Amino acid sequence: MVEYSARLDLAFGSLADTTRRDILRRVARQELSVGEIASSYDISLAAVSKHLMVLEKARLVTKRREGKLQVVGFSPIALTDASKHLERYRDIWESRLDRLEKYLEQQR
Amino acid sequence: MTADPKNELTIVRVLDAPRETVWRACKEIDALKQWWGLPNGATMPYCKVDFRVGGALHFEVEHPEMGKIWFKCIYREIVAGERLVMEQHFSDERGSELDSPERPASTITLRFEDTNGKTKLTVAHVGMASEVHRVENFKEGWSKSLARLTDCLSRL
Image 1 (cartoon, rainbow over the protein chains, first blue to last red):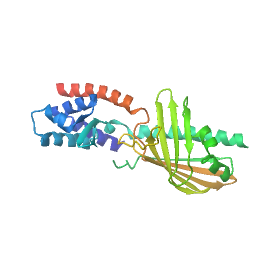
Image 2: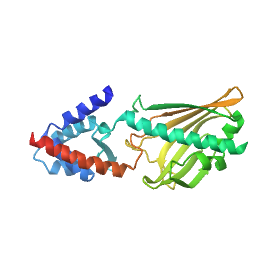
Image 3: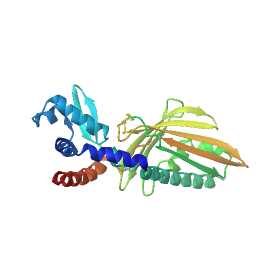
Image 4: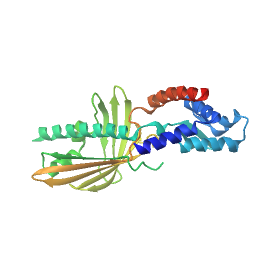
């Protein structure tokens, strides 16, 4: 939980900047290349890259390479609660093992 | 992306069957079809097993809410009757590995031990995706709440 709060702090902290909030809003609608993002702002490509680095570090966006382009997508991993998703996997496994138990019973 | 070290699950179940039977249930297709893939309300329209190191368990789960999801579990270690290590990937019908930061590959280890005539099965699942539901739905949901959040923040 402590770790989750720390991740949230980082995520919210990274949103304390107007440009970064704007970038996030745009990539949340669709994936954009770094160039496409930069073309909308009156700041240097280097400055945009820096903003993207902050968002990436806060785990709100992910970057992937597509040919020569770097594509930025919305991926708010920072906002998912790790303990909750572990519980979901636990449920999956428990029910899987229930079915295994039932199957083994039928084999006797 | 490096896996979250907390992203690890261990489950132990004692099964009332000989170890050899449990082992077979974990490697033979007819058995796997009956228990491996099906969360509540789901079906498994496709399942193929190539049981050897480097081979894979390739299957499709169709769930009323989650939609169709393909998985490929590559066998990484097989010690007959004792230990089975699989690398689980999100996949497609062709068996491509579609790993991404939101849907990373994870490792499943099954350990089989005798215990008073029964079998103790230990499952360790490490490095799972942070979201089990369809990533697209999830993105949409978060994109809406984040839009609200950013609106809020911009008025501060």
